[in-house]
Length: 66
Image (cartoon, rainbow, N blue to C red; front, side, top):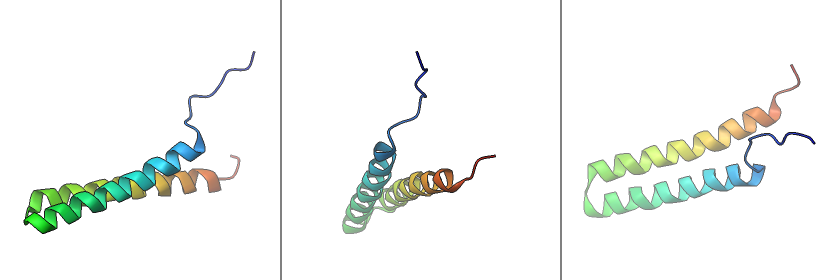
């Protein structure tokens, strides 16, 4: 029997990245509305994490065989 790799389904990675970006914008907007610098920074960090998920997914997909 073939061993199944421990990678997530490709769609899950994309959805996780998009969900993190959306959540980050919502947190950042909430921080802006209430004047909370810490909440704005947390929102930006979540957006950066979501972008990193998507960028790493694209980089892995575009790498040729070594």
